[in-house]
Length: 382
Image 1: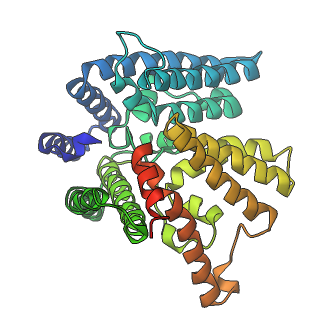
Image 2 (image 1 turned 45 degrees about the vertical axis):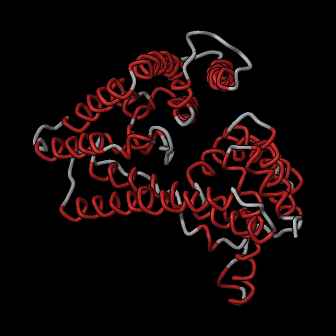
């Protein structure tokens, strides 16, 4: 998110933290001040995004309350609310691709909706399965959906966990403060120093007449850029969340030590994988428990994750590629490797194989079909 590179925005976030720390004796300070900060930041960042977000949140809060109290047709209401949200984000995707055009459309709407819609659906799931007891005040619902540190790139917050945090008084110890600041500095170093420098190298090599060694280098190099950029954002979000009195889940859990792709997707962008597993895989797997069904669900989930990143043949191909690999792991009973039960050589060789599969598809994250095809063509240019 661009604001993370803006000194004024970082100052605003730090100011917010200081206000929270100075007003700890006000019992409701955390919820109210977080609300004011979220709204003020969005208003300053983009008035269009601010208005769009307010309308979007209020409409979904009405649907959420309706579902909490509904006595009849709850399943229909639940599925309808999810369908409307998915249709909304899909329509905005089509606007962004110029498939549909309208003078009122602005790409900033999509910018604020990609991660928010996942949180909205999680809130509907909670309301559907818990009922009236899941009812949350408007202030907490707004803070959950518009929580600035995780607004555009996650980690993806779970509704029940965020609501639990809102009930806790603001109590950030000196150790929490130190850990939060260190995490923010680490994230900024990754994004502002490492990623910025590595991106120049990537662009310079990309302009060459690519041969196989160039393409292999670019794949590995781009993989490192994506990891540092994304994990750096997560570090900043986790650090600021901790300073604001909220626990933000880890998004990267040593993904390079994953011996299978199934385990890799539990460790790389872990909150996204958890979201799809909780909202799709766990629901359907209750009725279909065979390995073939698990393989089919794995394919479905990876295709959906690909399309969630963008409506293009490139992301669709990426989803099919990873879906097939996960399906094969399920069918061949190779989805899990227990490190304690295998030799070190076998474990690390499986980790290396997993990273090879990931690296071969990583350039899709560039979102640029021309760049991806140029690098792949270099693999056959000896």
